[in-house]
Length: 247
Image (tube, rainbow, N blue to C red; front, side):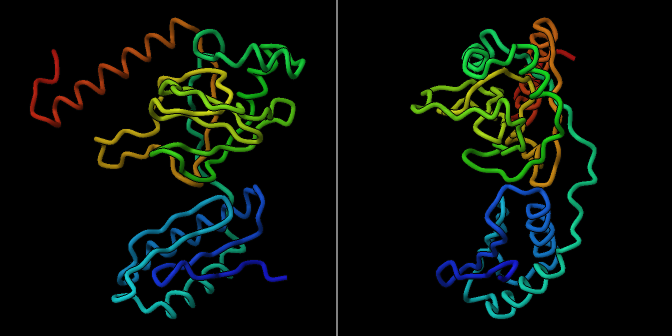
């Protein structure tokens, strides 16, 4: 069995696929090849999209030598066997668990038989890998969750999930960057916003990054939330030419 395959995406893309499973080493190879393609700056390449175990490369067929690009992808995929899983320092993300911020935490306690403190400890203990960004701008799919709290998503998604909500769906956990519908089991909320569109680089988390959650108390959550909101208002004001507030 081949360790990877490359297939067409119409006449303007290639899809590189490794083994179909949630695996940090496989995802590291995907990220490695994505970085390799971006560095090479092949003429006509429009987008490079890494996912859990695959990489899509979109190009302009009038500007790109598709066969040459495919050969480069194959060589890069073969060379990615020794890709490091991660060497980055984890980003610490503070979370206020439960209560109004984590409406599914009580359900998790009753359905898993695990206590509140144990659920929080189990969720905060691992160093999670960012496997991919998707669903909505900046939504990072993080894995893997302790099997004892790897609960399924809601059968019917909520219409509104607040920005900063931290949820679990099976083996994965994630942070909602903005208010959207969503079906993940929400166990807490963070003042951290992984997508800030007015920044030069709006994505604060990228595939291959690592994250660790840190429990916080209510007072700290409200203080950091207010501080973050004020900072965003000042930044947004300075971008559109309006006053940025005192100071």
